[in-house]
Amino acid sequence: MLEITLIGYGKMGRMIASLAEGQGCHVHSIIDPTQEGCEREIRPEFLADVCIDFSQPDSALANIRQVAAAGKNLVVGTTGWHKQLDEVKDLTEKHGIGLLWGANFSIGMNLFTRVARYAASISDKFPMYDVCGWEMHHNQKADSPSGTAIQLASAILEESSVKDEAVYDKLDRKIQRNELHFASLRGGAVPGTHSLIFDCETDSLELTHRVRSRACFATGALQAAQWISLRKGCYSFNQMMEDLLC
Ligand SMILES: NC(=O)c1ccc[n+]([C@@H]2O[C@H](COP(=O)([O-])OP(=O)(O)OC[C@H]3O[C@@H](n4cnc5c(N)ncnc54)[C@H](OP(=O)(O)O)[C@@H]3O)[C@@H](O)[C@H]2O)c1
Image 1 (tube, rainbow, N blue to C red):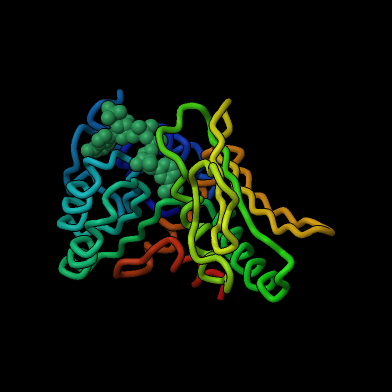
Image 2 (tube, rainbow, N blue to C red; image 1 turned 90 degrees about the horizontal axis):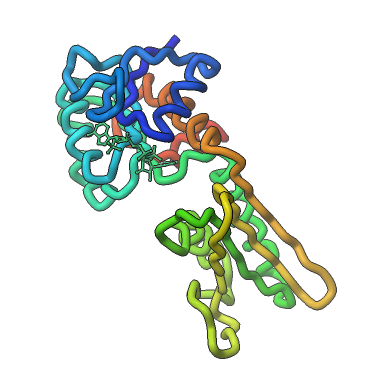
């Protein structure tokens, strides 16, 4: 069993705790300043072999600094700090630790992005196919388009010889051939759906990824904890997936 420390015991922290044993991990300690029954702050003596941070954008960097100084490996699922990635890479080198980060730990979405890229590259050989996409999330989501929609659109643009610009807003004109339209829909309790359509006059291909629960992110985070426990250096979730797919 891999001993892990959870930093942040909100929706994601709790989901990871509930799935840990099934993925060969034992929750050694939980750190969260406001949740009942948790340690209040990061101290070296609380930390297990690998820490998993799903806290808040404001606190992620300070947490990374403290865990690195304690010489422990770390998985960071918290978003909103990625502009400081260079500093984090320096920290992992300086303290000789392993760190894995990512904005979307869904293994299914990582596979979906690869399939989408391939679909875009082969449909590009047949000019009658046009491509567009949409995403749907629950009515509490604050931003649109989703970060994942932006990532998917970039992948399609990289593979297409026709499309060179993504358009997310409503259009009051005809769409241009070089524009990739990616629409956002908000409503209900949908945890996250992304769909791509390759369409022509005679037929239509639709590729869809549907999140059913946060368990898909938690499963990826636990897999990441196992993977980083054996490594030093700074890696993205995508780099881990490339390694697992070799
Ligand atoms: N990479 C992925 O696949 C993925 C998937 C889902 C979510 N996320 C990201 O993960 C983060 C957490 O998401 P969530 O849905 O679990 O949020 P959440 O339910 O708000 O949970 C975050 C928890 O961390 C606590 N916290 C705040 N500062 C902390 C600190 N310094 N040390 C330890 N804990 C601290 C919060 O306490 P308070 O509520 O009292 O502030 C809260 O209990 C967000 O940035 C989200 O965007 C990433």
